[in-house]
Image 1 (cartoon, one colour):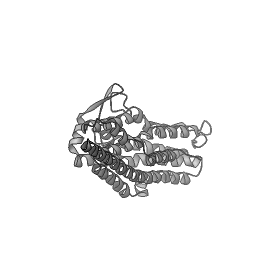
Image 2 (cartoon, helix red, strand yellow; image 1 turned 90 degrees about the vertical axis):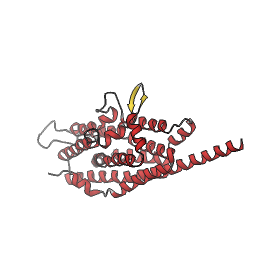
Image 3 (cartoon, helix red, strand yellow; image 1 turned 180 degrees about the vertical axis):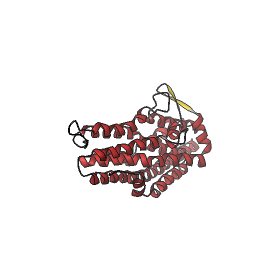
Image 4 (tube, rainbow, N blue to C red; image 1 turned 120 degrees about the vertical axis):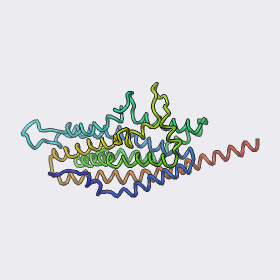
Length: 298
C-alpha cells in the first residue's frame, strides 16, 4: 500500500536551514528593539493568519474533485472527495474558533492579542510609530501570495501537491512556535511572564496575550495543536492516496513534493522577515534620532 509516513517527511527536508533562519530573525528582531520585535511578530502573525483561508480553499478544491478520489472497493457511488476534504477541514476549525478556549477565539485574534500585549508591555503610545512598525511590506506581501499559491492547485495532480503543502505546514509548523516559546523564555523571560498573565479585550472579549504561542507550542498537555493537526493531515493525505483515481506512486511523489515546497517557503519566509525587521528597526531609529534633534533645537 502506497502511503506517506512521518519518516518520509523527516527525510525530505533538513530542518537546520529553517532553524537557523528562525533563530536569526528572532535575534535580529531583539537587536532592533521594541519595534523590531513588534515587526517580527506582526509579520509572523500575518503569514499565519492567511493559513485559515488557504486551507479552507484547499478543502473546497478537494471536495469538488469528485472524479479524482474514487473508492476502489465499490462499483457505484464511488466518489470520496468529501472524505478526503474533511480531514483538511478538521485542521482549519481551530483557526476560526480554537477548541481550547471558551470564547470564539480565532487564531488571528489571539495573534493580535499578543501584539497588543507587546505594545502595552513596552508602554508605547505614539500611534504613528506603532502603525509604522505594523505597516505591510512588499516582500511580506509577496510571501503571502506564495503561500496562497502553495495551497492552490492548478491541475488534478496539483491537488496532491496542495495536500502535501498542507501536510508540510502541519509537520514543520510546530518547529516555529516551539523555537519562539523557548527563545522568549531564554532571552526575554519578563516579557514572556507578562504576556502569560495579561489579557486584552478584542471584540468585547478578554484574550490572553500568550495563548497563541502556548496552544501551538505544547499547550497544557505538552502537545500543541500542530501535533493534533498533523495527525489529521497525514490521515487525509493517505486517504487521498487510497482513493486516488490514477497512478498512486505519482500522487505520492506529488504529496512529498508539496511538503518539501512548504519547508523551502518556511525558510525563505523567515529570511524575508529578517530583512524587513531590520529595515523597520532602522527607520524607527532614524525617526527617533530626528525627534531628538528637533527637541534639542527647540
